[in-house]
Image: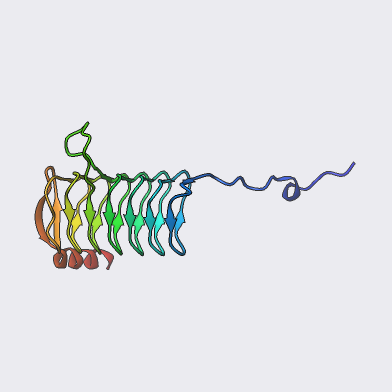
Length: 171
């Protein structure tokens, strides 16, 4: 009696699902990882990555070259520019006074970074090249080129200073 080798007896790996609405429009080279959701009437630009377990709701626009990490929640009506990073478990909201019938999204401008577990209130604009620190609760607009941290989030230094700190850390 011949035995099958382990290599030939293994089953092919199962494809892990994600759910992308048929009404979503994905650019070229978009990657949506395991168990992620992308809702209807959502547009995602070229070279953008959506992490595992992320939830990108309906009627969202995400630009090119973005990275949305796992467990992030992007609420309906959110508008995200190009080259944006949204960290793990960050939340963009769309209802400033739950449970309202009127909703408004968050606007994240080009080059912004929103770190892990940050929460951004509906109607807020996160300015171009700004940084929202880990765990921050953003209730007011973030000016361009500004780093905000805390609860509620407050400006602490410039993006230029942030980049100097990041460069020093990397060395």
